[in-house]
Length: 447
Length: 179
Image 1: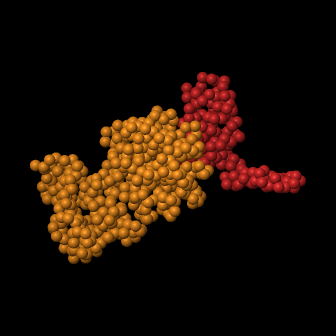
Image 2: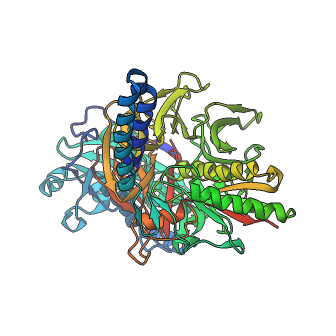
Image 3: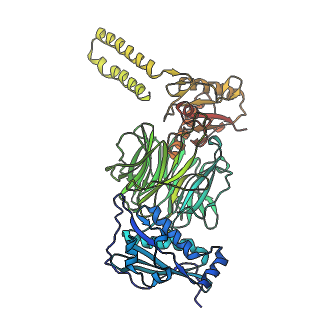
């Protein structure tokens, strides 16, 4: 019997071949998504019954393939075909697809697989096929505890996405956000976390105090956020696994706008005192606090470049909110936003080449991106109110929140999460059980 | 409206610093009158009082509560501004008088912003507004030991409307008794 391991094990069955013919271009807007057939993962009757008992799902093979399908569709790059048109049985397709059948329904890629119950564990094997070339592109198997079944679906999607686009996926990830309820004047806010596809939603605080702007540590399951605990707005650290919380630093006033450094070892944030907000960092190991900016204007919303060498931030030192970039020691401050309007919430792409921002111009709010020197500004979406973009870990998708205008009676307010591709295409609402704001995207949970 | 107003201020300064030096006294005076008239008319259009607002600063009393009879609890600000208006200074002087008479009272100044700005910047802006009120109270003899400052940014609007009047009510610093 194998040693029981919680973590997912990857077993490469057959090395994937490198001369695939199909390829998905994700650098441009994709109006012609790739037709892909996701055959339900086959399952033997004995395994099916065992999983039904443990997971209360009638056919876990079908459930996992549904997750893959939804993920692929949501990405906007793939068009999963209707299963009714599939001619070949799942178990046989996984052994050897009849490519002419799949070609007939215009599938260019095919996913097949097999689920089995082995030693109380879930084993999932999957294959990605190039239908036109008639070749296998990827073949992998995972073994994990049965309750991890949703993650298996996400990891398979990540492998398919990576093989077909050449870039890492973002499906085995989570979103932390602020869940909102109640009237606008007395909003109750709680920290909440969910899988990238909205499943496994969980509230992390009770709503007794106001909480804002949670952000993931890119290297661990830690979160930093702002809490008004005892009416003292301070930056906190929260360990999602243990639920342990602590105040960050010992500041004699409001600390806010926290984010982690790319190595996860520092928190960068604003500290406001006597009408002046400055940017500080605190090292989480030795607790050393450093003051980064020194200017009588508002300096806030700092975000590190992925190499940790630069910081972009928001300042009104020119008279109005604009975006600035400086070295991580606070030197060489340069304004980079020069377009019309006000700019806020700069956040550096994990790929390093772009900064996403919120822009206010003539009463409209925009989410946009610009190069790190401020050139090449591109506005992706316009609305009555929207702000706070957060990057998917592969730097291809932005998630943000949008608020509606209230009517003459001051009613009809809502706040929702939305996502949009860097290309400006594929804008969609991310469903949450309650109203939601301040989303932050985690790194890939497995690599 | 805001742009018109700041434009007018610039023009007056130009006359003070540049033009005056080069012109003789008579010409200067006539010009000044002409420009003053222009400035006044610009002023009249840009700072037009529309019901409960002057410029975009709230001047009504809908949301105002009172610390004591005749002592309003809050002051209002223009968009993106933390400058105290004449009316705000008057309110704060009343508060200072009241606080000097009641020397055991400590206060929290709660700074707020409207919903038309990013959350983090608004937290900083609320803090700056509350501190503008604090600084003014201190110049009228209220010790900083008696004042604490708390910014709510845009998190606690008093008016849930999405219109300029509602926003003007929400751009405020409220003096709250802490004991």
